Length: 164
Length: 268
Image 1 (tube, chains in turn blue, cyan):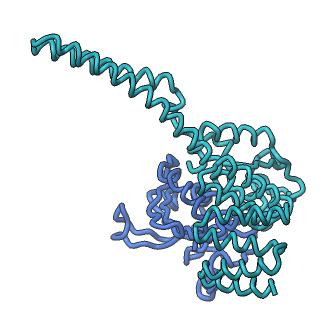
Image 2: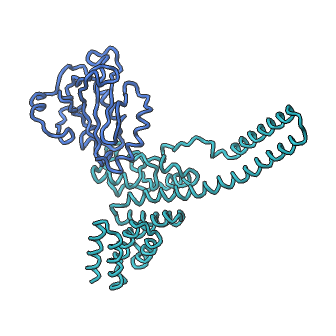
Image 3: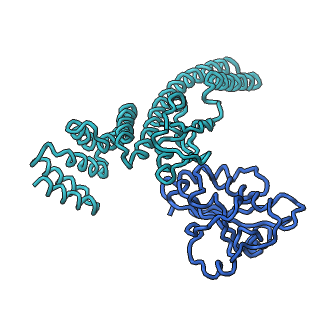
């Protein structure tokens, strides 16, 4: 449930996001002030992993947003449900689990800052993809995906390296 | 005894029976006329009943008994807003906000919002008066031009001449409107809020900006909400405590002045 504080902030973020000129970031839906979907693309057309692909991010906001971080993860979608008739998968990345959960300090309790917003987070994830050339999942992906029952925001990641 | 009436009143209030609550509080007050909370509670019940005058009187009584009364000033400001007294509402809301800041009251953010609403109401009143006055003058001049055209067209029966006179009159009225628009540039300006007057956490227009070590200013209540969760500067992530925040007086003044002529900015 979005509180009054979160609602007001999101209402002000929405028109900016709708009018965004950031390449490769597209607001797909924001039917309410609790869950927004964003499509992102890596703009490098020669990128070995992500060229020509579109990935879908799901933002979920608590009533304490932006004091509290939003819950952000990649989600799958069928071609039929997408505006460009192409399916969405979970990008291969050493910090992205195959269930879409992202290990990024920015989205962690300690790393979040309330001056971040939906667009800046989308851009961070876009550059996190753009800078990666490893076609792999995080260590322990299978076990994590099988056993994790926590919401993404409650998972306590140990950040193994600086860019995680 | 008075406490008992207060408890009964609170129960009725919780249940949404505001009229019952009012009568319980009233009975309590007759037992103990110096019991401050009975007045503030009755003010809240009367506020719910939209009995603004009564609510206002209760708040004033409560303030007389206890001058540093956040709740009383908070409801007083809202009653005054509803009674269309924006200047008084602004003063009460500002007092509530100041008490809230000094006592770290949890509702300070709401008082801050109320201050901005009062400023907007104040601007709306001034704006309405200004438009009415301008329109009155505009209407008078427009009437005079049309009357002159009408008189002129009655001195001839030639349809071509009549048409020409009518066209000239239309032209004059149009010119009149554009002249008035030129004389009122504020009305033609694009409505845009400068980014530096907007809190980067809530994205709301600021009332009481405070500055951090890194030089960025935030609305006091929102940066304090952040510091409760994480004692870091939102931009640099360096350690930051509440005591290190400094009021940004120049920016506060700029925000206040901007609102005086742009009250709409409160809900941009």
